[in-house]
Amino acid sequence: MLVSAEEMLTKAKAGKYAVGQFNINNLEWTKAILLTAQELKSPVILGVSEGAGKYMCGYKTVVGMVNGMLEELKITVPVALHLDHGSYDGAKACIEAGFSSIMFDGSHYPIEENVAKTKELVAICKEKGMSIEAEVGSIGGEEDGVVGAGECADPDECKMIADLGVTMLAAGIGNIHGKYPANWPGLSFETLDAVQQKTGVMPLVLHGGTGIPADMIQKAISLGVSKINVNTECQLAFQEATRKYILDGKDLEGKGFDPRKLLAPGAEAIKATVKEKMELFGSVGKA
Image 1 (tube, rainbow, N blue to C red):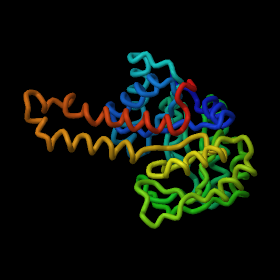
Image 2: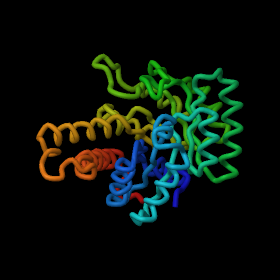
Image 3: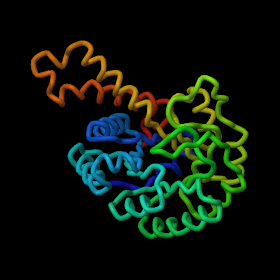
Image 4: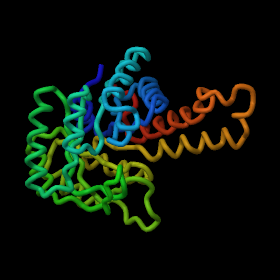
């Protein structure tokens, strides 16, 4: 059964580790992530961007697939199904479809409007026992057409949004989505520290987890980050393994063209990536 992300993240914040949010794109992705979480006894958050939701034929299809897998694969670790970078309408649609958690990204609105919309969604989520993530200061890079330069959030605005009753807060600390450029200056730990001092025990979220060096990840966790989002890294691992399978001519041997065979190396590569991240984040054995 899907659960809200609240309990797993409260435990993570108190225990100084982080829970990974791994974005899903299809059945293989979802299965690989769930099996790895179960094997490692780690809580996990499945992230769905609005683009991926559309690709997978809508949020109800995603909910049906995930719920079916939890049952068929006998998954007993806590699993949250979370809308990633949701618009106001997207958040409403996911609440309706049966997600257990949403992110409302109002970071591009003026702060007053971000506050008003977040307030309304917080009330609905509380009533339904769902968790809700808000964002202050846009995360750099591109995600589903939203481009940001990796701004640092204003700690006072963070407190203002945190006080509305959200479960977790994504604060921009110079992090970006996708691959990091060679001249990236690194995370702003000063910002992170200032945000945590204002928001206290609230779990903080680090977006753009792909390509941030391990020592920076560990330092971010020590400063209150309890949820780390990973997407690009799994995509790159999948692409590399699939490319190798085809370049090695495996798709031309016997029934190597069967999609179940063709996609297997990529799925294994996703599992390996997820395992590596869960070990780095410290969530192994915490379910």
